[in-house]
Image (cartoon, rainbow, N blue to C red; front, side, top):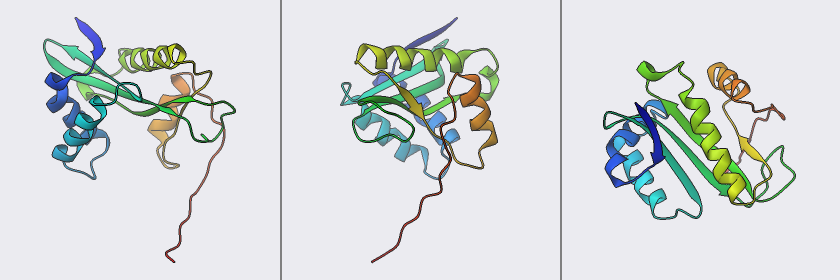
Length: 147
């Protein structure tokens, strides 16, 4: 049986491994440290894990954003910062359950909108967001300049 529960210190290693699977540009140790920091601020972060037989097989990270969020008209906005389900547990509706649980948290915090983003070239991420009920509101390319 799979349970979706708030992430705790006992989930850090499995959660960090899945964060590394999603964002492989940093080692799992960096992801673990970031996750540990998020656990210290439960008013701002909602971190959920999907656990099966003691193993973390999915996670979703939500935050409350009070700054401007592209495509949104209200504040605060609950923002899906990241979500990943282990390959062996995909295509069972688990990601949708995680998204719904983050949305529920946002509603309880007074949010009227739920936002997320993905890279322009991430076709899998686009397909996931659309399947999870998000509506595309625009596409951007960002720029910077050293001064």
